[in-house]
Amino acid sequence: MDKNNTKTVFKEYIQPTDMKVISKIIDQMQVDKYVKKLDSLTFIKLFIYAQLKQLSSLKEISFKVRHKKKLQKELGLKSISKSQLSRKLSDLPPEIFESILHHLVQQIHREFGKEKGNALLGKIHLIDSTTISFCLSQYRWAHFRNTKAGVKIHTRVVIHEGEISPDKIIITPARRADSTQLDALMVIEKDALHVFDRGYFDFDKFDDYCKNNVRFCTRIKDNTVIKVIEELPVDPSSDILREAVVKLGKMKYPLRLIETLDSQGNKISIIINDAKMSAEEISDLYRSRWQIELFFKWMKQHMVLKKCYGKSANAVYNQVYIAMITFCLTLLMKKKVRYQGTLLEMLEFIKEYWWRSFSVFLKELFKKPKRSSKGRRRLDHDRIFNETLAQFEDGDTQHLNDLSYDPIY
Image (cartoon, rainbow, N blue to C red; front, side, top):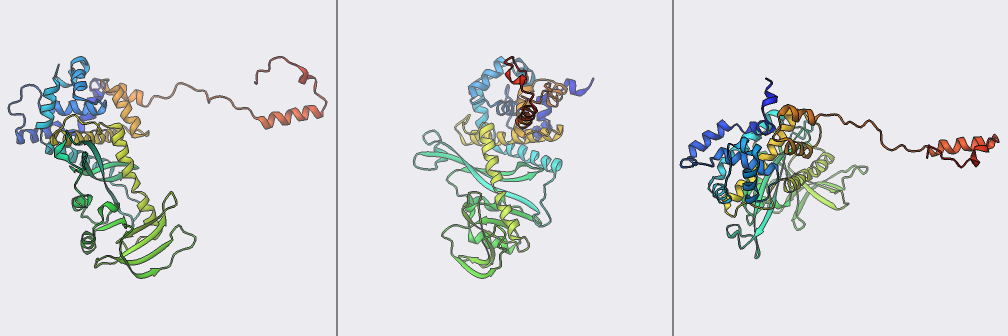
């Protein structure tokens, strides 16, 4: 029998996580030593399902387990209480989910390969962070502002064949500044190019990167002290307003300064420690930074991130990791079946057919539309007018007095 007829979509979907590898990690950490019912592997499957179906609470997850026979069959679990789910979510160390995410990122690299622009652009790494806000009274450990708490997801993403995927994430309480995590997000490899925003502005770090040949591109702050070393000629027909070699503040190493306009017509000042790229390439490169903002928006809209299942640090961190894991699994499934639609369409198909056989899923995924109609017919008004005019000029006007129904209308 064809394995596609026996294996469900959900089993195929979670297959890249490699449960044997996860079992070894769990055994080493001894987190299931005294567990009788909800072991860690079952928990991981259940919460991937919860992210996939966008279940917003532990109560809803518990309800699905009790009443969904197909889910019970997938998990080998007939019921689980909200309190058991809450304890497990808080007890499991985030390092388990961090390891799973790292394993999936490596698979994405193998399956896609890192997309390159041209010989000058090399490998592009987009770096930024996004904040998820909470109520301060319930998340004291994540104190952020006077009335708010929150966590910050410091993220490095890469572009694979037009698709954005997480390359590394670091989760911290939101109070911690972006620049404190920059070193951990940088990639020390040949041709790597890092693009980030003004939140990571640090003269000492910039000097270190220049000294160690680590390429970076970012915007300068409005109050930055600039010492001009040399003004460079600019093509008046290009979008570049200014190019110069400068030193910033107390920095030892010179940088290139590029001034151009953003999509809204506002002037932006970009610095880069690469001497080979053209000013136009640098301008286009920085505009690609917006892709990471679209990634954050996608995650918050289509994964369960803005509403937390638990209130402890472990619970929040684990939920973020599982959301990222679910994103990576969806991307790998899209690549595996060679689906040409959007990632959201892929997610919706998996969500709808998760319990069906993989062969049925593939059939529905690539089913051709039944309708052959090209839509509502549009009238060729110019042709009709010219034909009517010609008839009138020839004296053939008797039909114009006919009030019967004309099917063309």
